[in-house]
Length: 452
Image (cartoon, rainbow, N blue to C red; front, side, top):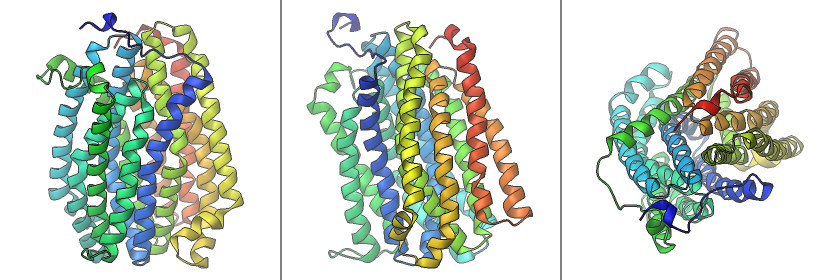
């Protein structure tokens, strides 16, 4: 059935109500995995400061592959949103099936790299042999969840790109509940399950990813989305759509991978400062992950709405839309920053590491909370660029930002041996550098000539 003969209309308007109707469910869906990260760290904190510190190294490593999937997600989401704006419903199902095919190939590559390359890299970079052994053991298990994560992310691209983000909450809630139960059970050996310690968190994460994925596909089918969007109708290999997905996604995949690799480099430098500084930095990662959820939700909203509006040929509304989304993102970030600076003890005490740990972490928290404000503006403009279809612009911005970032952190942490508070100030440099070219590109109007 041709798309234009259906009654399904997936076009968006640029009202605040439309923005929030897309962004708030995305926020909930992003928060839940971050709750999983924090839950892992709380339970692992019960095993001691070493386990909490290693969670930072292994967590950021896995995040490298997770954000590569996120880059593929963003590229596919922009394409699906453009087809939705053009009201070409019949094209969406095939894009989704080709996206899953590409994601599973990437997952297989990630597993092989982790099994055969990661032990060498970690052995070279970390100072403590026991830390290397525990990290490698954990990652060999954890990486097996990558295919589940990637398919999960393709599902996110489908639901957000077709303005049905409300269904994201169901799958992620299932994942959160499952993760908390199995974290507690497998780390500490409760409810008759084996006591696996540090590796228990890896098994718990894989089980929860499977549960969330299974539930959301059931929900999609039960709500008729499978039939509406022609999902699973045509799984034949489609070289043209695969090329289109890769063309749109590869700069974003590289962008996100380079970004998190630099963060892994940052954490390796922090490890040279000792376990406590590494444990503090791991809690800061949780702050970026959890409290940054609002920001990333509005960023995803910018991506999908900008692409959809361009698909409707409403180019004159794009900048107005970006400013509206940026206003919401900035407002939430300022609330979070205020909360964290008024109640730092409240957040830091949940890790159970004592008053000395909290006092050492507070100055870092103040720097990180202010960086969230910088991020809230930059990511909206960066993802608006993604929505225009020029993902190469994002990659160039990332390369410039990472270059300044890495030079700064190496100088401050490794050469000058300054406290990690100064190291975390690198986030100010990074997000400012991301903003400038993204803002310039949208203002230039060059995106109006691009086709997807």
